[in-house]
Amino acid sequence: MNLPSRRILLLLFSLGLILSSCSKKQETGIPVGQFASLTGPQATFGQSTDKGVQLALDEINGSGGVLGQPIRLITKDNQSKPGETSTAVRELITRDKVVALIGEVASGRSLEAAPIAQRSGIPMISPASTNEKVTETGDHIFRVCFIDPFQGTVCAKFAHKLGATKAAILTDVSKDYSLGLAKSFQEEFTKEGGIITGTQSYSGGDKDFSAQLTAIKSGNPQVVFLPAYYTEAPLIIRQARQLGITVPFVGGDGWDSTELVSVGGPSVEGCYFSNHFSNQSTDPQVVAFVNAYRKKYNEDPDAMVALGYDALLLLADAMKRAGTTDPAKVNAAIAATKDFPGVTGKITLDAHRNPNKPAVMLEVKNGRFTYVETIAP
Ligand code: PHE
Image 1 (tube, rainbow, N blue to C red):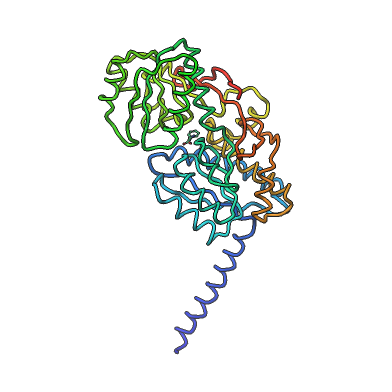
Image 2 (cartoon, helix red, strand yellow; image 1 turned 90 degrees about the horizontal axis):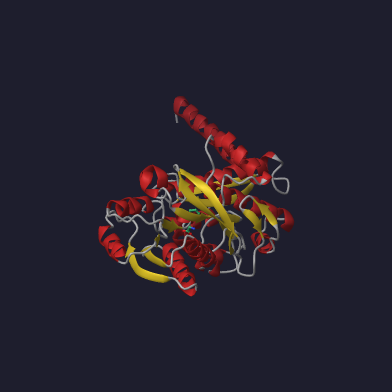
């Protein structure tokens, strides 16, 4: 080997050493995995949660971390695509060796991740998935939000409060979330003497809803229950208005995105949806959180921000109580969570790993999500 190529080799070798010591340095801290839809059709879901998780991370690491160590958050984007979540979660567990997982917003994607976390013995906390089946996967799957049997009941009670005795339902058959919510709404609405004038369905990604809406119109409902995501809800409501359906639409947390208003415009005014949190709350803890969030991101937090924030803080609290980052012990500590002071309400996990928390009803008013009332479980 001549001298120049030896020099190059030496240079490459030292570069390698520098790089590997850099990456070692980055690898200190407690590895916690997050999987979220940071891009793709439901990007606002993942981006919001991530911002809330980041804010919590700043607070935790800024005040000395957990058990003397910072939390090292490793985030993977599933691009809102089916199938990507399982790949992401497997990587987080086997390659990044995370001790716990935060994810997902969409129930369908949490249901994809949950069996993997469960089999691997890694606790998973869903910030926002409300479908009942998510935590039924097993004793390692938790959530910090209420569940759809409650949310559907809240919406049905509210529809009655609006004076409606006749409701139509329009369901997204491609989503566990929508199917579960439609079912619980129907049960409660009819239990209280209401009549379902018709049930129609579509599939996520559809753009033309005129056939379903024409059928709904012919039943003359006084309210339409729409357990949709924000990706379709404003399109549906806009088309409904064009067809002359003037009654209010009522939906669930899946409507929560500024896109509901930017796409729906005047057609979504006077519609209502249930949610986990109102950023107009006057509770001092919520006010402090909203201000901290505004300072960091220069916008108002939605419910997923608040739930992501609560999820990571609850995990950090469980690690402190466990006194270790061993996943089995952390799992037991999460399960024992009692009266954790979340910004979305007090969190006590029941035997099914679900909290029992109130919901808020919001009205779309002058383009803003305006607080109407809190409905306790
Ligand atoms: N609850 C929805 C689901 O389970 C997700 C969601 C939560 C959407 C909160 C918006 C706000 O699929």
